[in-house]
Length: 353
Image 1 (spheres, rainbow, N blue to C red):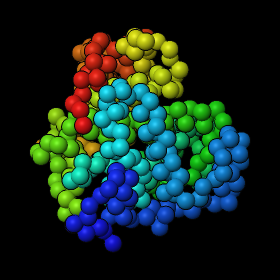
Image 2 (tube, one colour):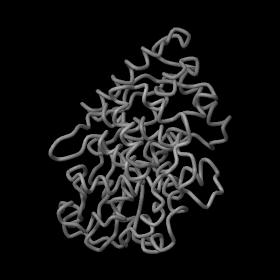
Image 3 (tube, rainbow, N blue to C red):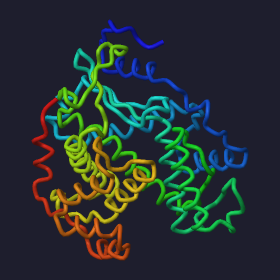
Image 4 (cartoon, rainbow, N blue to C red):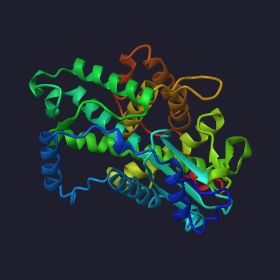
C-alpha cells in the first residue's frame, strides 16, 4: 500500500523506498523470459567478463546499475555541490511501467531520483539492436532466426517495433540478442553513455533548483506531500536540465570512459560522445516524443545542447542533417571541440540545493 499522507521521512533512502512502494508495477510480470540458449550465453558472458554472480532479480540488478552510475557522477561533481547533496539525496531504480525517470523532494527536504527498470531494459535492448544494425555480423545469437540471415533492414524493423511497443504499453519487449565480444564492447560503451545521460539529466533538474520552483512541480499527498517534477512541460526547464546534464556527461565520459588527463575539458574531442547522444535523442523521437505546447521536440533539445556547447555552426549542421543525412558525416569529419569556454563555470555556478 502507498504510504499515508502524514508520512514523515527520516532519510533520503527511506523516501526513495516509499517511492518504490507507491509506484510498484513489476516489470517481471510482463518481461519475456529468455530461452535456455540465450540464458546459457548470458551466464558464459558473466563469467568471461568477470561480472560476478548473475543476479536474477530485475530490481536488484538494475538498482545496482543506477547506484554505480550515481557513484561515477558524484566523482565528477564540484565539491561544493557534492557537499550540499550529502545526506540529502538517494538515487536508485524503481520497478514500474508508468514512468521512465523522475526526481521528487519531500517536505523534509530529502530528494529521490528514480529510474524505471523498464527503461533500463529497453535501452539495453535498443543499444544491441543499434550496434548490430551497423554490422549484423556482430550478432552471436538471436531468437528470431539464423544470425547469418539477419540483415540491417531486419534490425531496423525490429528497432521500430520495440519502440512502438514500449510507447504503447511501457513494456520493453522485442528480439533477444547476444553480440560477439567486439560488438559487446561497442554496445557497453554506448549503453553506458545513454544510461548516464538519463541520470545526469535528472541531476540537472536538481542542480537547477527545479524542485523548488512551484511552476514546475505538483504535490502528491500519497507521498507525504512530496513535490515531483512535471517532466517535459516547460521548454526552459528541459533546456536547462539538458545543458547541465550534458556538461556532467562530458566530464564523466572523458574522465571515466576515455581516461582523459587533460585539465582543459573544453579542448577534448567529443565526436564519439556526441554521436551517442544523437542516437539517444533519435530513440526519444521513436519512443513518441514530439513537439507540442507542453514540451520541446527531441531535435530542438539536441540542437539546444549543440548551440550552447559547440556554437551556431554545429547546431545548424546538425539541424539540417535531418533533411540531408550527408551533412552528418561533415559534422564528424574533424574533431568536435566545445566552443563554449565557460562549461565548467556553468556547472560550478549551478544553483545550490
